[in-house]
Length: 161
Image (cartoon, rainbow, N blue to C red; front, top):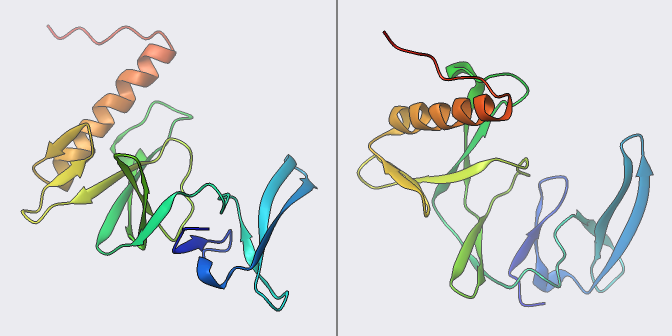
């Protein structure tokens, strides 16, 4: 394994150099079947479980700084109160070809966007946009989310007189 560390399902970071064995486990829950990797050290001690396949993580390097995890409520047409920003430390980067993805200590939901605060106080949404500040980013993300909601629910845009 070439990775530096892996994040467990209980939000614990484990140095992969301490992982001697990983085995896949299949379980049943009230939500249906699930699979995860159980991680063990050389003494057979269970270190934790992860959904990340430790054999397919690519090269991982240590990280620093912080990321913004942007979540948007999507079960209703979102309002400003439905855009949430959570700050998380970047504990590493997974490098694959020309792409780099931050590794964060907390699990993200499908659809969450990862952004970064720049030295000038702006917010960078990689490959998409650079915003002047956090408020500008939240306003733009809200407009995008509302447009997506309207498109999915075939709502006509409001006509401004």
